[in-house]
Length: 323
Image (tube, rainbow, N blue to C red; front, side):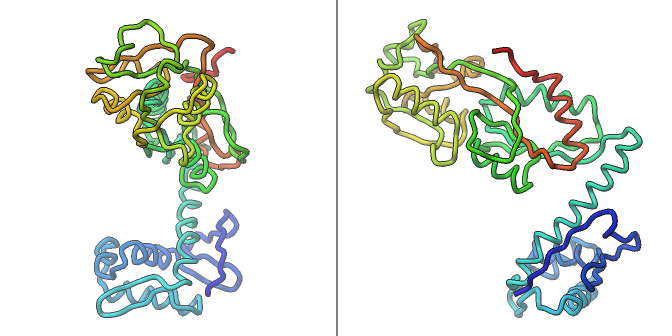
């Protein structure tokens, strides 16, 4: 088993494209070749991806294995697979290139140019009032910034992805479980109910949640850490019943589609009333309001200058609402 940790900083990276760490000398292009083969699991496809012939690629991998003193791939005439050592090396090799990209971003930031990629996770329809203003403002202000957007990201999963560096920013619902991430409230929406248009209460201006105790509910999955699913369960408990779940689905807009199809009813934030599908209606709940609290979450020690710039724009276009 390979026990290897590679950490690249300004002092570690040599501008002759060689990484020197703990007596190991590794050329950056060797790691690039390793990543390509590890992702393709095919030397021919990896060579084409790198615009190399297959023979030089194989020689590069063998040089890397000799320098590290271990095999990174199990090779046969029919397949290529990572060894345990290869699996151990892969995330660290990727980190080398992530750190180099951060270095490029930082060097350009000193000239006043914000450049690079920021990855943003969001749930879908629940963010239709908050995601577009942010992405539009970023594109207008910083045309050299690339936005990598990932949908259907629930709160708990999004926080975990931010913690491990897979996402830079995620839209979440508050409150969160204890976590190292920072959050900032960006919106509050009252919960209401989405009903099929032929539901007996569809024509009301307000409904009591308790009047829906016999209905089937469509929700986001509770086990993926959806804040809306948690709010649904809590609001129904406060109304004196446990909701009968007839369908769980990770896409909020698909929940509305199933409501319009007559599959059940769903509690939703009031912002969806502007995007309700045909054959469905949004009706506010009567009584003490239950709010869905929208927030942004990020790691405070993320060194990306792009993240800092995007968060500054978010403060302008998505200010914290007054209580």
